[in-house]
Image 1 (cartoon, rainbow, N blue to C red):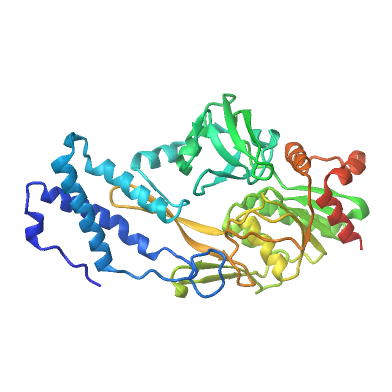
Image 2: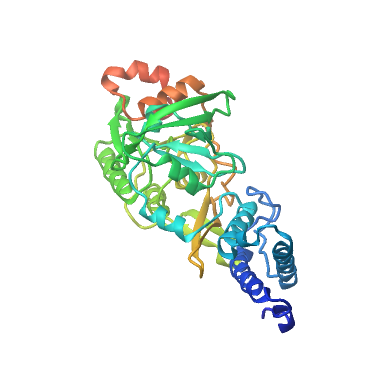
Length: 429
């Protein structure tokens, strides 16, 4: 479809006309890509009432909006007391960013300077991943062996302020910049626990990000294998394969995979992990784009399979690719899920570099589980829900899920880690 051009007279009607046309052209170049963003038919991420609605181009609506933008610029230039403060480049980026974030708070428009600083970012942080919502950032999960885990921060807690700076309507890049700093430097987080509605200040020391925590394998009572998987990276999945091979060699009668506070990782790595436990050709996940014809499904490969009875431990910090694995194994009845409802973060984000150097980051596809349900905003409900007191949750987060010594601490572990105790009981039947 060709774009309609404004009559030449519009561009030369006044001395500032050319500048307005160039500004509007920049706005249009940034608005056009957004027409392909997906939205479920009912406007609810979890709706299964029909295929995602494709937002088709509407030139009349687009140019009507641009006309309003031109009218506003004209009024500013004529009436604003300090017209020199009107800077088309930066002002347009700010305006377009607000537009993008009004479409989806997880979407953002980064300036070239922000892109450069993000790419160059290094150093220490506190070890949390956040989801960006309408109001305050929400902690997805603390990373294993990080200051945030040691402080007992929990999935779902809202980040209200960092060093006194409010995080209301904060962008992801702003949160990351404030959490980063020199190693051993202090930072104070104000967090709200949505369960107790209590707000508290947590003082942490930033630490250099360590080598990702490895997969841990332990043998519990009755030679049942326990395997902690803190994230899905390629290295972690290789370690998981080695651990499962050893469990098979040791003739473990069952396996417990601990995916609690696993915030996800690499999409491809998670597929490989799910494939280890599913027959070849079994559906794992589908990427659901705005255009139904682009929907892409992924199935289990022909690699080595592990067939021992399987239990997955999940909680509110199990997110993204970890939820993808959990949902696939649950839908195929390959594993029993025990714990609490997962985070509900199941979408693919794409970054698009625009002509002016800005980068548009926008969700482009939902993860759809084999049973054809979307997980984003809904999560995965365990087969057996185990209620854990909030203080116990914080204690487990503080000490880490795989740090126990089974030989010496068995009784204390069974009394404290109720989901693990339930998993052992399920496999012992």
